[in-house]
Length: 260
Image 1 (tube, rainbow, N blue to C red):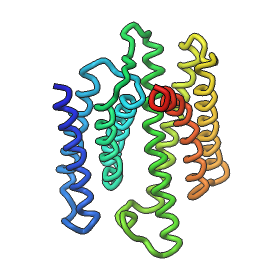
Image 2 (image 1 turned 135 degrees about the vertical axis):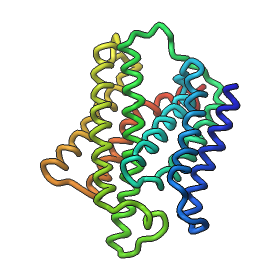
Image 3 (image 1 turned 45 degrees about the vertical axis):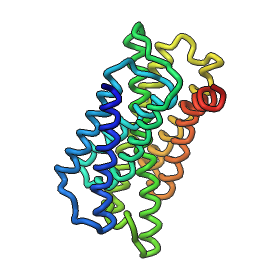
């Protein structure tokens, strides 16, 4: 039954992305917003059921699927407030690829049922933080390309249909604020509820997570006090994202994919 929902989610993700992508390529008229949201929401429901109808697996490929489910969910919710439908063209296929990868996973690291509420809050806040900050990274890249093309007075491709630069920038800093709050909860709950967060097998993850928090917090302070914007914000966002992803995915990739 789970496989049926996974395949359904893959097909619906790709269909929704193609529906919006056809408009961007000038193949069709602008899609009906409710139809696009409906397809995306149905894909998320199928994906979510495939994830939560069984014990959550914390293996590299399976947790990637969970991350992209959160990312796609947040991206869809953002369309209710801002015209960000075009981001779905990028994020929905990535969610589909994450499902395909998880279906071929050969490792198993199920979430233990006896974990305390504190540990569960740490895991959940970590996943949410990484998801929000991943969207912020994609937003930063789009902002960088849009800013460059506007300066060159030659806006082309997908950039033609993105929201105005000021809106894109405002969205980036909103995501960063949310991400930093969630990352703060993740780090604090880890310190409180993990027995030894600075143990040898956790020290690199802890250090890089704190480094990422410092980078993102410095950027927010710089934006508030010094007016940092545009390419400066992009560079700091990407730097913080790299530190954050290395902290989690770096070790899991080496241990589970390169050295199984």
